[in-house]
Image 1 (cartoon, rainbow, N blue to C red):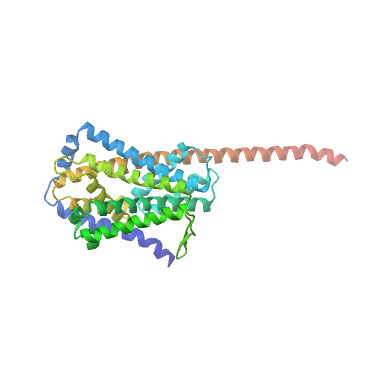
Image 2 (cartoon, rainbow, N blue to C red):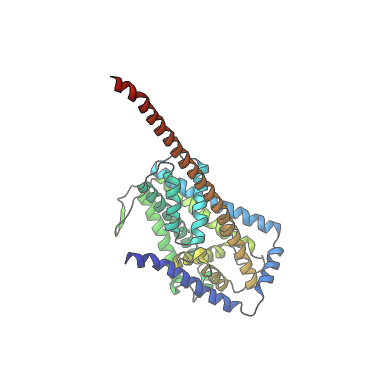
Length: 344
């Protein structure tokens, strides 16, 4: 049974990719998309690219802060910012592209942080707190978008549940989201008892940790959404808050689908949510997002992993050689002592 469960989510991810690819094919059937997208990429201004790159840096700095916050929660302070940043960058670059981000992220972090002396239990708490930080930011920003711009979400009718696209119910859900964040803050300030959901136990972090979470998570999501916003044309652009709301819905749906990199799922929702903009321009902005947020970081992350594993292999080989020399030295000492003992 366990073997089948391990195959379930990868299967769901492949199905999501296949279905989304089919819908995207129908959207652009009969159109020469490749040449048009290339032309649109060349038409983007240097300012647009610069702002998209800056947004990417903001997002990945915030992701590194996720790990740093979790380490502070654990009381671990001996690991440098550079190591934490490289570990976080590699973790998210691989997880965002591979899918099953919790599993793949845990594997990368385990390999990296055990080399710094962290136990498996500590790494499990670190991974859980990073996921909680992301969820907290999504709920906070989602609640704000649902309260401030509920009418704009009507464009996602037929894609999102009706409760989210109806302005009245959207505001209610937004208020519930913000209330959940407020309860989390109160639990942290007044050190309430841990929240137990089934077999999962959530310890409220210290107020200082909570404040950092409430800054880092929105910072990451705003940076990631900013890549798309700055790559879109000014004419017909619905505004950053709307793009942020669509991004939160699309990114969440892509994560739930477990599709590698949200491939197809992410694009389909964005195309449906921005009917007033030329679809080729939306597709171009999404390609810029994939290049800066997913593909280029993935290429860099692979290099980092190779260099890290090569260094660990060299250390293991040197350690083995040192142990071998020590064993030979001990053996030599034994032989030197044996005749003397024999004479006695």
